[in-house]
Length: 373
Ligand SMILES: *Cc1c(COP(=O)(O)O)cnc(C)c1O
Image (tube, rainbow, N blue to C red; front, side, top):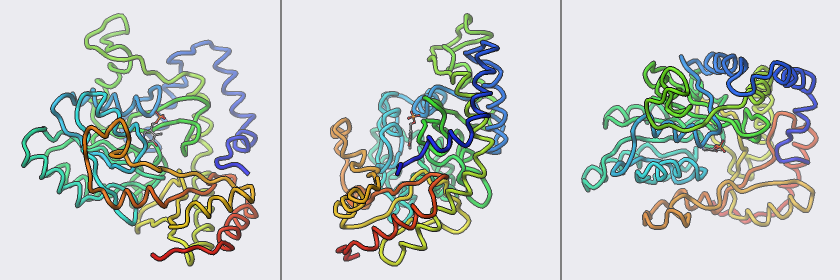
């Protein structure tokens, strides 16, 4: 059994993907070919924003956002401590300071109340200038944007949605990738919408930001890449990856439905014995991960492994506990610390068979767990 079964997905889409790749090989525009533009239009339509700007990966997408907002030394950027490293890395790479925020115990996403407390504390201390918030759609569930957008507005902060895991999710029909001033995503193969290498995209409704991001993406270009009006980077999406993504995006709405059916089956089987994912009313998750909570994580994962079932821990360390961030000396993020100690993720992908789903649940239910929660 695979944790994320990309091979079966390829077998299902093989003919169409192969044809698309061959079209690129035939026309030979390997960089910024017509598929890139076609994909950017399709992505913007799907997400419901004016502009989608593709780039080399999800980390670059966040870094380009930092550049577009001129975030740098002396600035504070508020990020969840329970996330993938890249979310916080780009802040430090821009020479700004990440301020880590604790998680909501139910959704695992950034806790809006703690966010506001930390913003006020930073203002009171007066050492750093609060500049931006990066909210993450962890495991596919959109963060609490109604509350976070209000906080960003109140304190005049830029809001970036890190939808690397959230692509396909929504809140009352508004798609992930459409929240905040800029949203970013990743097409790393294992993400809900993945390509066959590295890839990423940035979403915005703002004309000026879109122009700026397109310039930064190609060496700070002006009229063309040999007219350089600012210092930028080289962060383009390959045409072949765009071609693959066009076919994968066409299949994505159906896959999203299959992911949600798999999640529903897990929850129905497991929620009496385990803490299963919480999806607030009106929210749709893209189920980048199906993550449960248990004090007996190690024993459960060992039993799964013994039955040939893979499981993973996302994430066993919070950002404030990472060696690279120990110098920031941020403490007291108790909810996230507890989560990192007892969450684990089960196989999740659109091609998960019903009998595999039942077997995984049966193995978990057969374990005697010591969950005094
Ligand atoms: C994967 C991921 C990224 C980085 O994306 P890459 O394409 O791997 O650079 C950023 N943020 C989150 C939350 C992610 O899960």
